[in-house]
Length: 307
Image 1 (tube, rainbow, N blue to C red):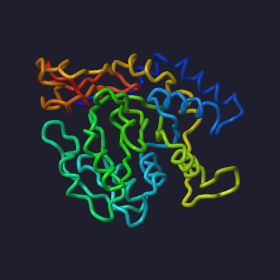
Image 2: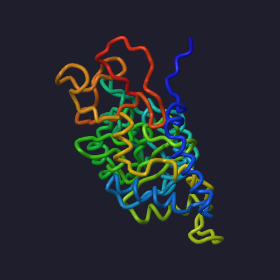
Image 3: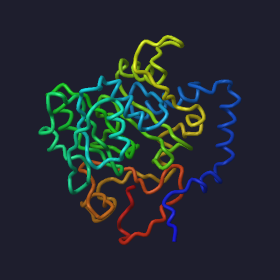
Image 4: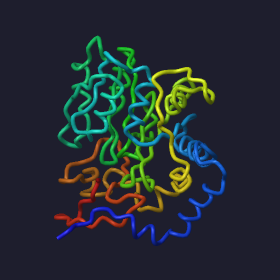
């Protein structure tokens, strides 16, 4: 028996007219590359997070790679991340020319064990790359202190934590920059590959915009290398929902405040009943903004899917 854990077709049928109208809007605009759709989405996504800058890119993997490069990470550097992550996190570190250094997870929430990070720091360490996962946020306070002490940069991997909060702060607002994926299965998903990098630094944002566009500051003049062709597509930006708060609300990804799922006071139940990270307000990853309701069998009706 085939178990469908994700399917965008029901939503497409329900919103087909609006989606095709969005595509037609782009095609009739006369601007297919880095036009009003991309700039509009960038403004809205940055505003949702309360940050100054958002740079749309072609996918989440390059969001991590370009984010690292924009923060000055390159060959010879080490990036401390977590072993429980998807391959793209590590591929992106390698693509930037750096070496990944892994720490293990905590047993209660499967997030980076921040108590192990200090011991992994070496003279070659340049960046910390926490991975927010299952709609939960890594405990960022000790990482921020460690980064301050050793003059390190922090890039948050938020591919699985759109809209999640930790002690009131949104994922993606607690480091020097943050990488997002809008792969179709994500909470905020496109109809194809897409990604973005958030930052409050105008200098970092300027580097990102050059990096995604061949290293050009202005058209035809390369001022930064290496450069890439990593632009967010106009069609994906147009059909991606613009009002982030409305999207996260309407797609059924409710904030699961600690204690809401499972027994009172025990936090959110995870895939095997373990609790969520302390202080977290989660976004459920049981279905995506592209998808149908989660249809996987559940052994315990008190548990909620988080991926």
